[in-house]
Structures are given as structure tokens and as C-alpha cells.
Length: 211
Ligand code: HEM
Image 1 (spheres, rainbow, N blue to C red):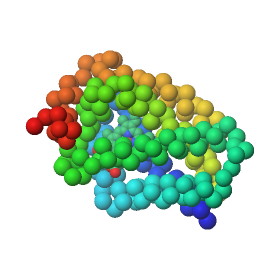
Image 2 (cartoon, protein in one colour):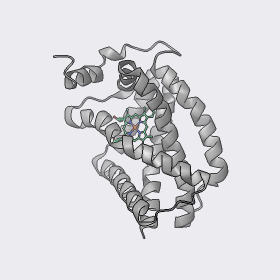
Image 3 (cartoon, protein in one colour):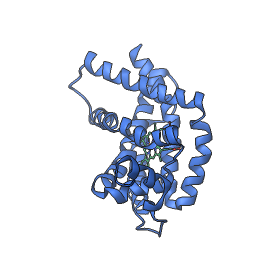
């Protein structure tokens, strides 16, 4: 029952995750493309009923994962299962901060982060956010695609043969993620000053660094 719940909620969240990651990779095409795709997608994923389902699925998935970790402690994990656990723990440690930093400002104050908000984080704390924004999509993708394989077998829905998909997705995504961060840092092409964005103003005010 717990495994099925975890599989179903993971699959549901994966629909948002893959759209979200594709949106992130589109940053390669520039600020405008990233923002336009995000504002179109947002009409769907921030539609109240849809957002409740997405965040609800995430919470159910995390709760089932934590319960299973303590109820079924397994030590004899395969390499892929070990990485599944490592990426799951990493995502668990960062996901609530990610949502609080990037969703709360628009939810409470109508300030959307967009390209400039992510670029601002990289400019503000590069030693933290450069590795973070390279690792985050890779952890999300590995956990998502590998999990999709596990979930599809459990639910009896033939989705993708996970074995080859994981390798291909990860190789391509690693290159893309480095390129996206270079783009967000303004290394590949000039970008507008992230420090001048509405999100930066909001964040600096929140941190008490600007009146
Ligand atoms: C480099 C990678 C990522 C970047 C740049 C990024 C950026 C963002 C941004 C800008 C938002 C706000 C969206 C909006 O206002 O429309 C957001 C929201 C969110 N992100 Fe990410 N994200 C990344 C990876 C991930 C991963 C891997 C996950 C999950 C495992 C994730 C989960 C979420 C969730 C749940 C929200 C809130 C969605 C909502 O309720 O509107 N993100 N992210």
C-alpha cells in the first residue's frame, strides 16, 4: 500500500518536475524564452487546484519515503538504488527551502523570481548557488527518471525502459545544467543586471540589506 502510494504520488509529481526542468534548460535560449515559457506553464501549475495536487503529491511522496526508510531498512542496495536514496535525501534537504525562496514571494507579495531571480541568487552567493543549481536539476532528474522506472513496474504502467533512459538523460542533463548555470551567471551571453530586478529588491529588503 505504502509502495503503491509512493509510486503514484511520485509519478504525479514527475509531470510537474519534467516540465519544470525543461523550462530550466530553456534558459540556454535566453532570459526572454525562460520567462515566457515559465509564465505560460505557471497558468497551469499555479492554478490553485493543480498547485494543491502537485504540492500534495510531493508531500505524500516524501512522507511515504520517510516511513518506508524506517519501516523497511535495507542495507543491500544496488548502485542505482543507492543513488536513488542519495538524491532523495539531498532533495528532501533542499526542497522546502527551494519552494519557500521561489514560490513564497509570488504567493505572498506577487513578486515572481523568473530568470533574474535565479541569476540574482548566483550573483549574490556564487559559491553556494553555482554548485546548487548544477546539482539540483541532476538530482531531480535522476530521482525522477529512475523513480519513474520503479513506479511504472509497481503500477503496471509501461512508461520507459528506465535502464537506458537514466544514462542518456543524465549525460545530456549534466552538460545542459552546467551550460544553464553559465547562462544564468551571464558567462555565455550578456544578461540584464539581476541586482536591479524586482525579486532582488524584494530579497534584499527581506534580508534587511536594503531599506
Ligand atoms: C536548476 C534547477 C531549478 C531551477 C532554476 C528552479 C527554479 C524555480 C523557480 C524560478 C520557481 C518559481 C516558479 C514560478 O514562479 O513560476 C520554482 C518553483 C518550484 N520548484 Fe524549482 N527549480 C529547479 C529545480 C527544481 C527541482 C529539481 C525540483 C523538485 C525536485 C523543483 C521543485 C519546485 C517546486 C515544487 C516549485 C513550486 C511550484 C509552485 O508551486 O508553483 N525545482 N523553481
